[in-house]
Length: 540
Image 1: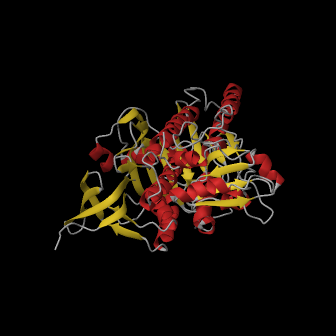
Image 2: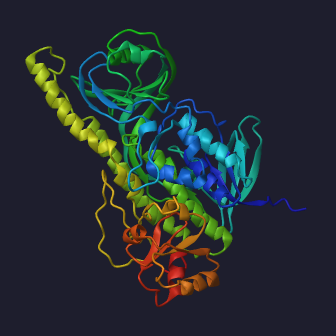
């Protein structure tokens, strides 16, 4: 009997939100995968609490929007961002945001952002994955080492509790194992950028009646400015009794003592109150992107390839975009219709997005620290009051850039992708705060509400979709035949709806399984097979 282990299609290392999203998308496609995680799945220090609008569009695809909207986070909790000297001190400014129950979808999406902290969001993704029979979970299992060859990856894993080891053989392995990625280390891939922007300390403390002890009312994020500048934040993790204080720190490596932490909490409040410290997590704020997103049959996603300041809430959301881009390409390779360049396109598509988002997050950090030192900030004088008004006005104007980032979340494009067919139109500018929909190849296919109540986004996901944007558009039969020749899943959808025609601008638009436009024109291409071969990664 052979000792060669059975081969699995995809081995995912790490069961954080990015690993769970990748497993969930693969499982949604019916593709088997195994996910290993050295922990037990518990979240002791939720580092993420913002689910961006693009991630919510993916949740819509997976059928879990209702679960996110009905997470334990209270729907009636206001999401204001406040700029303060202390909770009982001076209010310098405020950006008002509605509670989640009152949030309105932007015109460009069928979804809106959600407040769902990681200790609520991860279990929703996990529950979704566990409804899919093709996904195997292996908690308390860590990756020890791996090798790869032309046909697959051989991973040695260890049961953390028992110390026993075994070998797993997979066609592909994906590292979703975070900032200290063992997969990245095993590949010998370096991170490039700034390794330490700040040495920050997060403190989660419990206090059920904190809001009643001051006059600022309910809000999500409180940014504290002192004479030395911006020094800390407090966010309402669960909208009830859990609060996360971040002592921002500097580039100097140090961890505050418990006495310093308690003094900081007292300073931020401006009064003594009863609370319980639950966890303390020192961490390093970085600005780094991996020099490569994978080698051979091993790829990485999420924090394993891009490390950014949380200012803006881009981290997890960028990682889930990685996962969706990678998922359909893995599925295509395993199904046998992908060309050799399809998986190679993952890095040139996603690395520029990672670089852009990492840089924008750091710019947001700069905006948050923009007040600088102002010795007279707390002076109870007319001059002090005038200074506070000036700082509040300038700070609020700067911070607006962080609170409104639809262009970052929806406007990422794959303009230079090797598996996109350019249409020769001018490259539109990349937006940050605003977002202008475009059906230019490489862009996210526009959202338009259809007469039957669906979004155009609801049409995309499992295979390629050829949109005919009018009843008299070319039939598309030649593209369908070319796709069939190569085994590429392609479905034709005719939309005789003027608003959709205006948004997509061409009579024929080919949309990829990830919802990005691959090709468009008013006429069928002279060589349909060449188009199909390009978008499946078979030609350069």
